[in-house]
Image 1 (spheres, rainbow, N blue to C red):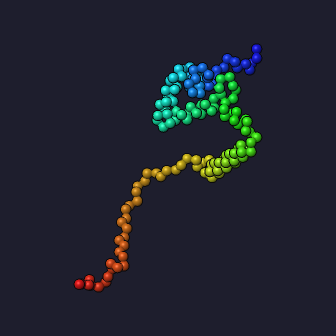
Image 2 (tube, rainbow, N blue to C red):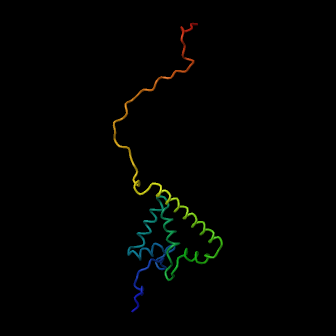
Image 3 (cartoon, one colour):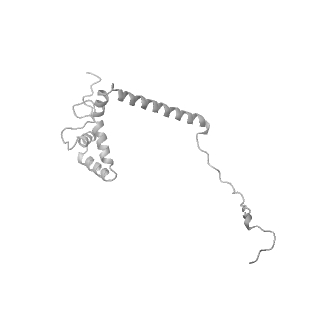
Amino acid sequence: MNENDFSGVRQLRRTKDGRIIAGVASGLGRYIGIDPNIIRAALAIATFFGGLGVGIYAIGWLLLPEEGKNSSIVQDLVSKNKDNPVWLDARAKAEQGWAKAEQSWSRTTHQRGPQNTAPTYPTHQEPAPYQAPAPQYPEAQRHDGPTPQA
């Protein structure tokens, strides 16, 4: 017997039977072992409250492979365009951005040092005594002599 035989392992796939739109809810329901209509209802409720359900369904449609296939839509798209100059440029820019983020992160952690990782907060102390500020009068209001009368 082959020790790498995974034929009995359940795989998360978009199904062809029970499909209404793209088979995401039916495939997820089959994988989890619940009725796909429960998943559809949850996605519909999430759609009414902020539109999240449509986004989740679209991500599932793009990332889950269809039943009988080994790769998803995104995997197929990437593998077909992996030698495209636009894809190579985008990949290089993403790697550069990631490297900059790592450098920035390492600089901030090294500046603080391992002993100063926790923020410091002021302790409870007696408040300083209140001193009223000295009154400040404009020069136009100051006069040394008697007040002129009209």
